[in-house]
Length: 246
Picture 1 (cartoon, rainbow, N blue to C red):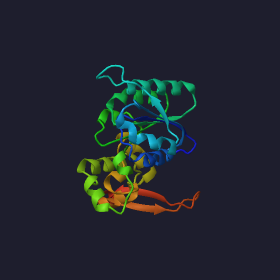
Picture 2 (spheres, rainbow, N blue to C red):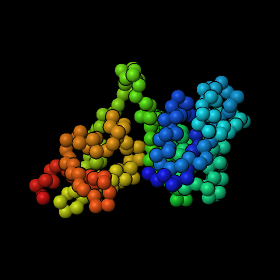
Picture 3 (cartoon, helix red, strand yellow):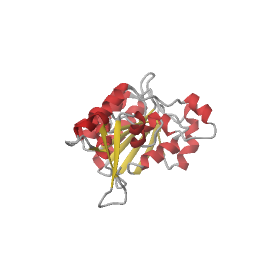
Picture 4 (tube, rainbow, N blue to C red):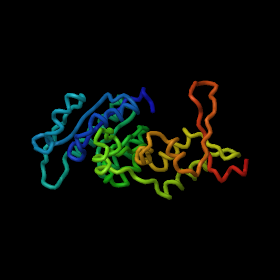
């Protein structure tokens, strides 16, 4: 997270639900300052009416894009052209692309090639090529705030169960970074996990942070150490089977 990072937030209005725009903007604020906020779509379509009341509340600028040809997505083209214009303006250090459309895969790749940090936000149906083209990808579903209707929300948006493949990913990542005693700094583990799998997020499995997720698996040790430079403790992890090597 970098609070000094100026970000352009570009939203595909045709391909993302409006219901949780506030949560999406709060998520973006974790990674930087959203200095440019635009949403693209054909605002003559009734399907975008739900967005209209939310734009002023969140200071998002609507960009009108007519569908010139049936079957062609003009919104995607407008968003891509604007992204490149913003890139060359030098006004931002990162982009947040809000869409579930794989058509933005090449755009995300190109922005990263230019040294931009790219955050993706989309639904769980988002194709994997777009997900891995981003530095980090966040599912809209996990941004839905907890309400008193927990049972109804749980039925609509069940929390994923962590799989053996994901446990193996955590294990190998710890081993990649571990010292001679098997310990790895959790901050480095989290960063490397995102590089390997940009949509890896503890919230997908019902945990706000990586530490409780790792503790819940039962295969890893967690050690909190005093930091000489901060009041916050440093957290280290290692695979339990490495204990004998100590």
